[in-house]
Length: 547
Image (cartoon, rainbow, N blue to C red; front, side):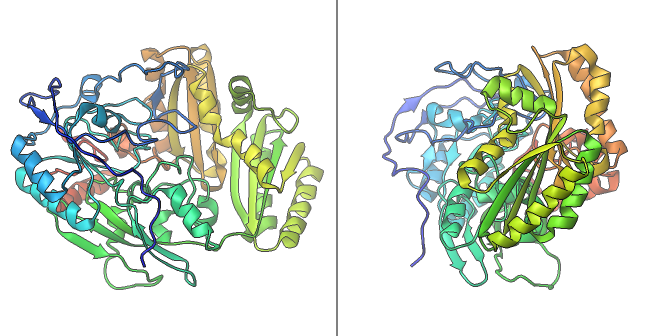
C-alpha cells in the first residue's frame, strides 16, 4: 500500500456562482464562473514566524489589524510590461474543468492569497487557480496552455522571498498542493520518493518516524513544498553538514512546457550515463519545467544533538572559532551560525528574548549531531575548553535537551521577525568569501551613517551566507540609492553571489549579471528558448528582461 501524508486541504464542496472583478490587463475582463471551496489554505500567503523580504519590507508592526492593507499590484509598482500571452476565456475554464473536475478555482476571495507573496510585497491578478493531483493532469494542463499560449505560474507553498511564486500579471496559477503523496521510502538506503506538493515538515515527521531526517531544514518548513525547495535550490540550516539539494536530490520527474513528461526519477546514488538533466531544473524556479516528483537521499537520524551559544569579542575571533570548530568537532559539526550585537539587541527589544550569555560584539551558535552522546560530549567539552582558554570566546552556554535547544535556536531564527518590527527593512542575501563576510556590514555602516537606523549582519558562516539588513523609520529613496547598486557591486568585487539561497525570482532577475558573465546569461537564455520556446512557464522571473 502506498503511504499517504495528511492532505493539505479538506475535501472541497464546489458550487457555482458568478463574480465580477476589475480587469488587470487590457482585454482581460470576463464573466467569472467560480468553483468555490470551503476555506482558504492554512498558511498559504501568510507568514509563519519570521517575516521580512528581499530586498525591501516596509510593513512595520501593524500586523495586529484584522485585515492587512491591500498590496500594490506588481505591474503598478515595478516597470514591467505584459508579454503577448493569450487571456483566459470561458472555453479555457471549461477545458480545465474537464481535465481536473472540481479543482478549477476562479473565486476572487479564493485567489487572493495565491496572488500575493507571503511577505505581502508583490501581487499579481490571476483569475484562475488549478489544483492537479497527478503528473498526468499537469501534463494535460501544460499541453493545453502551450497550444493556447497561456502563461503559467507554478506555485508550491508560496514561501519564497523574491517574488518568484506569484503571478506578475494574470498568469494561470498551477498549484502543487494536492500532489502530496509519499510514493516510496526505503529504510535501508534512506531514499525517499514523493510528489512535489509534500510539505517539508510533514516529510520530516514521516522520515523521522523511520529514524531518518530530511537533508534540509528551513524556517518555512511548515508551509513550503519539497518541489518548491528543489525548484529554488533552497539552502537552510543543514547545508553545512549535508550540502545542497544538488547533491542530495537523486532524481526528478518534470513536466515540460509543451506537456511532455521527463521521467528521471531514479533512486540510484551513482548514475554516470550522459548529461545530468535533473540539475537543469534544480534552482530553475519553475522557468524550465514543473517538478512533479522528487527522489531524495535522507541521512540517518542523529542520536545525540547538542547546541552551544557563545559570545566572541570580535569577528576575527568568530573566524578563528570556526576554524577551531571544524578541526576539533569534524564529523559531528552540523551548523555554525553567527549574529552581531545589534541582532541580539533587536531580538531582546522587540521580542523580549534574553541573551543566555554576557553581552558580546558577536555571537555564534554551534550545533553538533552524532550517534554517541558520550563521544560527542567529550569532543564538545575539549573544544569549549580550547576556545574559552585561548580568549576566542568570552562566555558560553550549552544545551542538550530539546527545550533548551529550541530556546537557543530561537535567538537566531527569529532575527528576521525582530527586524520586521524595527521599521522599513532593506534585506540582502549574499554569498561571500568567509574571511570577508562581515566587511560589507562594516562598510555599509560607515557609508550610510545616520541615514540608517540599524545595519546588521547574521547568517550561515559555515557556507559563507550573509543576511545583510538595513532598517529605517520609513522608506527612503535616497537610502535605497545608497544601497543599490553598491551592495551588488561590492559583492561582485569579491566574486560573491547576489543571491546565496533565496533565488532570483522577479525581484532579483535584473542583478543576475553581477554574479554571472555575459556568456553564461546567453546560454541560460538559449536553454530557456529550447525548453520553453513560447516562454509560458513563470514568465518575468529568474532571467533578466530582454531589451
